Length: 85
Image 1 (cartoon, helix red, strand yellow):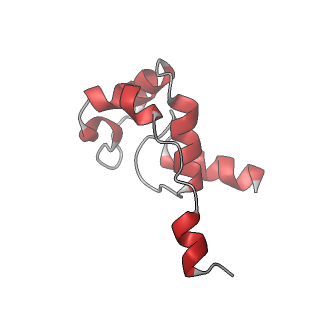
Image 2 (cartoon, one colour; image 1 turned 60 degrees about the horizontal axis):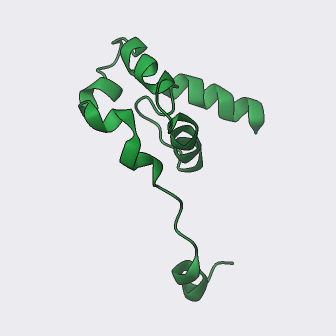
């Protein structure tokens, strides 16, 4: 059981990857395309990003359900979690 004091002392996750992430240079519509739209360009940008692994870990840990994170779409992250889980 988590208590109030353990919540206050829990370490913050390392978010420094966001400072150099290539996605910060593109608009959110690039990584959160309309349903049925291509995610190819976003995935290509992710593939060149140093923070890709940390981004994917963040998305999996926080159950991000929308958009491209760490080079994977929603469906791809869901399949990955199902395989590992």
